[in-house]
Length: 451
Figure 1 (cartoon, rainbow, N blue to C red):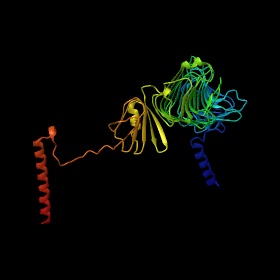
Figure 2 (tube, rainbow, N blue to C red; figure 1 turned 60 degrees about the vertical axis):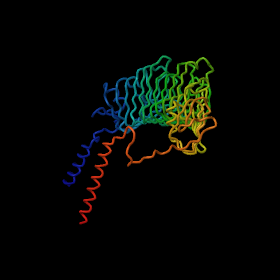
Figure 3 (cartoon, rainbow, N blue to C red; figure 1 turned 60 degrees about the horizontal axis):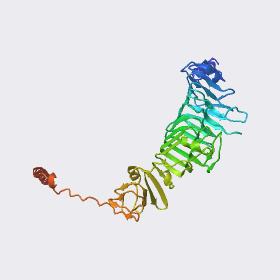
Figure 4 (cartoon, rainbow, N blue to C red; figure 1 turned 90 degrees about the vertical axis):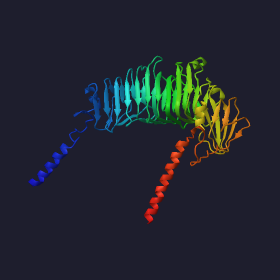
C-alpha cells in the first residue's frame, strides 16, 4: 500500500510540475507568470509595453479598452463578444488567434475592433478577425466616425460578413496598410473607405460577395492586390454605406465631397465591372475632386467611368477599353488567339513585352501609338489601324495587315577562320597549330596503347 501511495504521489508531483499545470481553473490571461481571472483584469493591470497571453477562450461581456501600448498573444484561442471586443485608443498588437464578433440587433456598434483617435493596431499574419452575421451585418475592423491620426497595419485574415470600414472627418490623417499575404474573404464588402485615409494594399487577396473595395474619400494605392467580387452589378445613392455591388474596385463620391485619389500600379481585378467610377449623389461638381490612374494590372471585367476620361495608361484587359479613358500617348493593341481577345495598354516597351509570347496563327491589331515587334514567330498577322508606326519583324504594318515570316536562324561555321577586321593570321596560325599538335599526340598515344 505504501508503495502504491508513493507512486500516486510521484505522479501528482509530476503533473503539478508540468508547464501550464499551475494555471488556476477559469483564469483567462496572464502577464509573465502572473494569471488573471479575466482578460479585462489583465489589461487593467498591465504596464506600457507588456505582453498579455490568453490561456483559454474568452467570451467578453464588456469591451476591452486599450489605453496603453500592449501586445495580446491570443495563444491560439478566441476572443468573442456580441458587440465590439476591443476599443483601441493607444497601440495594440494582436497575434496568434481569433477575434470574433457575433453580431445581434442589440449591439451598439457593428465592428469587432474599433480604432479611435491616434490609435495604432497591428494584426499579425496568424490572426483571424471574423464578423458573423446574425440579424444584421457587421464589420471585422472599423475606424470610428470621428477618428483622426489612426494607423492600421493588417497582415492577417478576415472572414465573415464585412471586412474593414474606414470612417472619419474631412480633415483627417489616417493610414491603412494591408500588406502582402493578407486575406479578406467576406460576404459583404472587403474594404470600404468612406472616411479620409491614405491606404496602400499590397499583394493581398480581397474577395467579396458585393463590392471588394469601394472608395468614397481619401487616397488608395493598389500594389499587387487581387480583388474579386462574385456579385451582380448594381448601383444606388447612399449617404451612409456602399453604393455599388458587383465591382472589384469602385470609386463613388460621398455626400461629404472629399478629395479622392485612386492609383492602380499592379494587381488583378475581377468582377462584372473590374473598375467603376460614378457620382451617385447627384452633385456634379464633386467629381472634380476625384483623380484616377490605372497604370497597370490585369482587369477581368468592364472598365467604366461616368465622370472621367484619360486615366488609363497601362494594363491587360479582357474587354476593350473606351478610347476616351486612355491617356493619349499610350500604345493600345489587342491580340486574338483562337476565340480569345486580350487588350494591352502601356508604353511601346511594355506592350511589346506583353506580346512576346505570341504564337503562330495569332492576330495582333494596334489601334493607337507606336509599336515595334521583333522575333515574332511566322504566320502572325499584324495590323495597324491607328496613326502610329508599327513594325513586325522589321516589316511596316498597315491597316490591311502584314503576315510575319519567322526570323532566319543565323548560320554558323565553327571551323571557318574569321574574316575582316577580326582576322589575325598570327593568332589563327597558333590556334590551328596547337590543335594539330594535340591531335597528333592523341593519335600517337592511341597507337602506343594498341601495341
